[in-house]
Length: 120
Image (cartoon, rainbow, N blue to C red; front, side, top):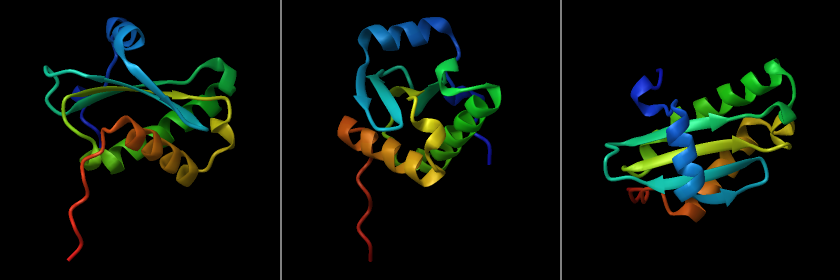
């Protein structure tokens, strides 16, 4: 299952707006920036992986992992959000499970996760 292109942030202006107005929540492997936007129906996200992380292969592996986490956890994310996920220098060392845990912990601190339905 692919994420629809409508959920991705691509324009430089959106990233600049996030930097100016968004709140950041650092984790060990990622930094999550959040901005509430009533014009966004579900959520939109962008990924930043700088050359400090390594070569193109390493950066693409991290981006693929982060996209997979967003795809699998998208039902937990609240609506009306702009999100930017920035890979930190430790991200290449992390497993997928560690990246997921770090990202969800940052999202929980940001208060953007929907409450889980009670188990029956």
